[in-house]
Image 1 (tube, rainbow, N blue to C red):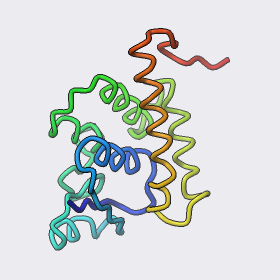
Image 2: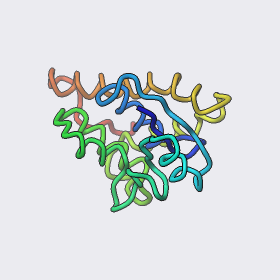
Image 3: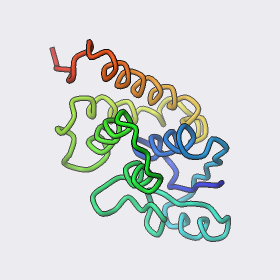
Length: 153
């Protein structure tokens, strides 16, 4: 399936493709276009749009497209639910203090275009960050030996 979003991807527009490829559609193809072209490309390419006006997952109603896809695809993984809270806090204005990990994720995400040449390269490199964060949350949940929150020291 093809998926389309706005170009110059950062927090949610990287997390959502990661979620899609890891849990929804392993063969997903991602298109990155100007914001005002997402709805048109969604229609003309039979793609699923996210994080843009007119997209199926428009990143509205106060939740991210990451959260919307978890709901629509009925993904019940508790680690994904926790990761969704972090993505939400890092991406929704005014929510940054809801999760201690959000500030770091936001800062790293804003560095993506500084170390990559295009959005496809960003996905290739940034999926590792989401894999690592998911693994950390999973290990913390299963072992109960890692701290529940990371404080600033």
